[in-house]
Amino acid sequence: MTKKIFVLLFAFSLANVVLISCNKECCNKEEEKPLLFTIHIDVGAITTDAAWCIVNLIPKPGSEEVLNSHRRFGVMWDDKSYPIFNSSDKVEESSIGTKQQYICHLTDLEPNTTYYIQGFAFFPEMESQYYFSCNVVEITTLPCYIEEEEVVVINGIRWATRNVDRPGTFATKMEDAGLFYQWNCKIGWSSTNPMVNSNGGTTWDSSTPSGTTWEPANDPSPPCYRVPTKEEIEKLLDETYVTNVWTTENGVQGRRFTDKANGNSIFLPAAGSRNYSNGTLLDVGMDGGYWSSAQSSASNVYRLCFGSGHAYLGNHNKSSGFSVRPVVK
Image 1 (cartoon, rainbow, N blue to C red):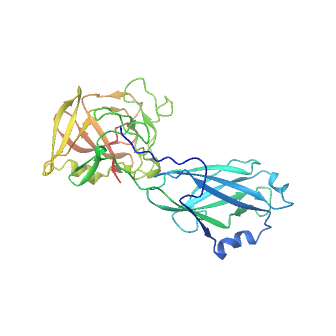
Image 2 (image 1 turned 180 degrees about the vertical axis):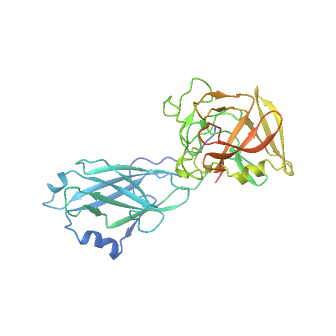
Image 3 (image 1 turned 90 degrees about the horizontal axis):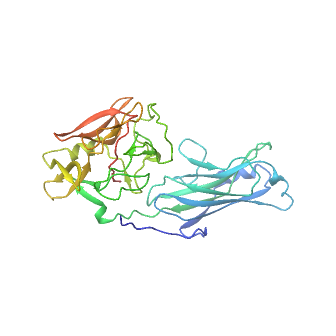
């Protein structure tokens, strides 16, 4: 697979980073407490969906001993100007310790989006436990770059030409099965035996995954892609505009979907699935099952189903393991 890789040295320069003055409300968080130290943030290695940052606690003269006490510290971020602790903010923090520097990895960011990052420190032994940096760092993630051969437009939807393999990657060839995923989960499972997941585990979890839609943080698709919606799968199955036929590609059986107007097509291998109750491998080479992002009930999800006879929109248990063929965001 040809891929554009954006590499930034792990040097934490302030390239693509803006320091924003804090408003009075924000600064008051520190003004109400003894200013024994400052919190400084450097950000670097910014990509389409992630960034690294370093949070430093810098003691003021005479306060070095205070900073030797146990504490947690880290960052919170959001697409709002001044992130705060609430359900919409992302937070990453260290475990309790005495270090004065903490390296954070901000993940699941959206491409070409501005985020605001603020540092904090938490001292369990002090009366005023939380301290916040009085500056907010602004970053903008890189825009998406999609290789032309990785995507085809079918009935107005930009489909990837290969299945998702390990989280964040595509299978090497269009006929490769990639990995199976349980719904709303980011852990892939082998499409051949022995059964093993992308983290090296071998214990199948038959409990029903939570959520009413496939959450971005759990999406295994590569950056700039996502699990398709129910409506996008319906457009792929719309025989007014798209033909689909059972065929064999390089010895692998599956179905090819072709746009009647522009001739673009994708091949979906009949990779089979893994049973929802125990992970047993089922129907390899006979059936294909591809998740949508939409549930049909508390325990079932809409999916693309096909065999040698026909393709249709069905639904199945959330705990099953099926393939993911993503679309461009």
